[in-house]
Image 1 (cartoon, rainbow, N blue to C red):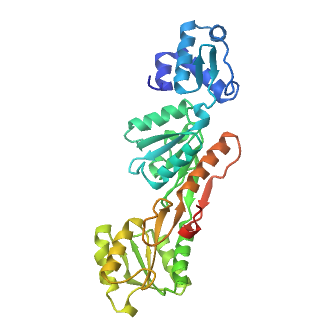
Image 2 (cartoon, one colour; image 1 turned 30 degrees about the vertical axis):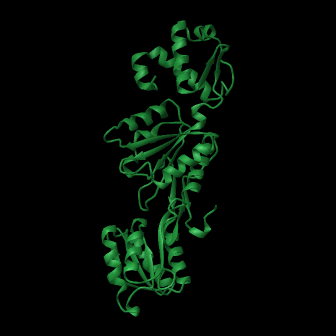
Image 3 (cartoon, rainbow, N blue to C red; image 1 turned 90 degrees about the horizontal axis):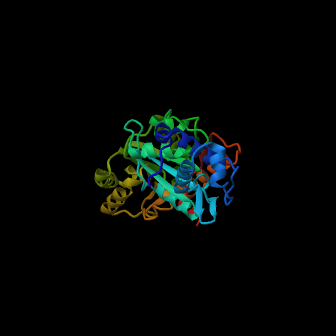
Length: 353
């Protein structure tokens, strides 16, 4: 039996839809608490002025959704109904359900003995199956809350954000995107990460900074990199700044590092973790050793990306996921939560075990 879309049910069987909605609200509101026995079918029949068959159908739908549990002795509210234990992860089109954040969130949710529901390839413009599914589950209050992974601006004013009484957290991986007042926005403190990364290179004795990235960052961020280099007394040069795809990274690094020692950088800041292997190959080809001849730091999502061969800076995806769940639970309890949270970066040695 597939989950019922509340809007479709209302169109096809309005009386049944109204009974399902009211009983579901009794559970979600706490009128019928977890483990509590429901009134008998005959009592419900009188309450809703309907047939016994319609009452049976309504209870069957709510049992299938996980709100109720039926047995020979009667029907009770589930001890762990979905509005308290099902957490949705909305993965917008263009993002991946296998991203470090999504995998960490799934792990954290399931470690709390809760259910993680993944809605993949969600795109309001194409009304994908999972887009309709998450809307249906939210409208039917089958979720404790949702986490929107890698927040895209195209969801800014979408119907998903307008469903009432379902907490919404947007996990924003990229700087500079427009946030929404309809969800708590979790942001990464990228400016602090720049200062911290370049500061670490300066502590290692680096005085000439190279910056390698897949693409040109926003001017405000690139200026922050230059300013931090200046603040730490480090030299930057256009010859040491490259925006390159991973397949071209090795050759760029090899050519740059074969310059005379005083004309080449002694510290490299990698802005895209996907370039780390190319930088490692380029240094190897040039005969240079990280930590001895040069110092390298790269962004990475932690703790998963532990195999990167350089010093890592980034954000603990597990802690980000725990914070998302805590915010959802606080909202469900009616507590006030901030509209935005700015998460500080960590160096890999600062990561909690």
